[in-house]
Image 1: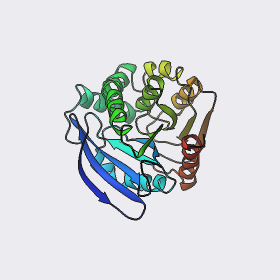
Image 2 (image 1 turned 120 degrees about the horizontal axis):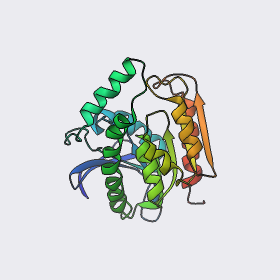
Image 3 (image 1 turned 90 degrees about the vertical axis):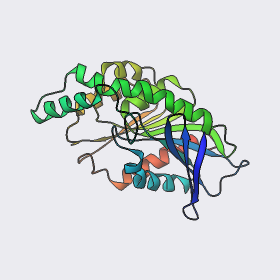
Length: 250
């Protein structure tokens, strides 16, 4: 990991950009964090196809709210996003998805697999490499959670990496059958947010995925409204979930 910039944004948050192999990322830490008082870490996922630069204002706001609670956060550029090379077949799969939704049809499994699985196969090892590097920093504690992003990435990471002890997921995106199977292997505490009227997404699939999770502690928070209509109190509930499971006292 090579840090390329560092800036103290205010009295709460320090932001550092870095490169790692062929991708880049941003790490946020509370200004109060030291080696003797390390901060737990939240991995901040992003919607598929959205660049880190485009999402930066929103990610920075989330990082600041978590820094107020003593939590660090990190985000990385997803495969196929920003300046990174496009994933093979992704553009055509996205066109096929949009075409099916415009016609009022459910996208076929082959389209969903082509759009999601290559992304998951690339993104999860990159998240694990990021974890290797960030957890080696003295100011970062050993408790890790995943938040938001492409649902299938969060599910795979939670299923395969024991360092992730909790996850807050945004339900509603299309997922392949493979993700349904992986969900049964997920046993960590889950906080799943579902916008009931999320346009272009499959509510029933989201409910089936939630049911498939093997976690003994899993909570589904469903709110009326579309994809961008998440109420502020839903974010507050998610923050309390992360504090509860990442607190050093736990």
